[in-house]
Amino acid sequence: MKKYLSILTISLLVILFTNCENEYETTFGETESGFVQDSVYETSSDGLLLVQVRAANAMTEMGAVIYASKNNNPTDTIGIIEPFGSLTIPIKENTFWEVTTYGNVSLIEELVIQWTPIK
Image 1 (tube, rainbow, N blue to C red):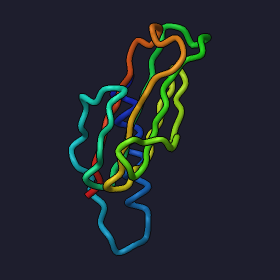
Image 2 (image 1 turned 90 degrees about the horizontal axis):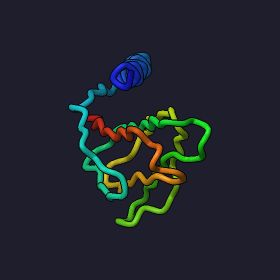
Image 3 (image 1 turned 90 degrees about the vertical axis):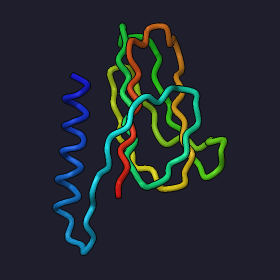
């Protein structure tokens, strides 16, 4: 299911970018995974950050928060994902970002964090 959501999200973004009337060509780099929560990363290009949360129980208050800023201690909240939720958000080059979890995190079965650079 998560691969389907990732493919669907990327497909919609490709359609969006190809339907824009401008003189610039947008290409996507290879999607990267292996990112972990509570670690700060810096982007080397513009790109799309995908975060998905799958939980054992949707009735419990828990989820993930995405922070980003231009300094290496990101504090600006740019996204909140609830259980069984997904968010794809654009992030500019030279931006620091971090994904943290909150609530009853023991019920989180899977946290997916992927980065797709835009060239």
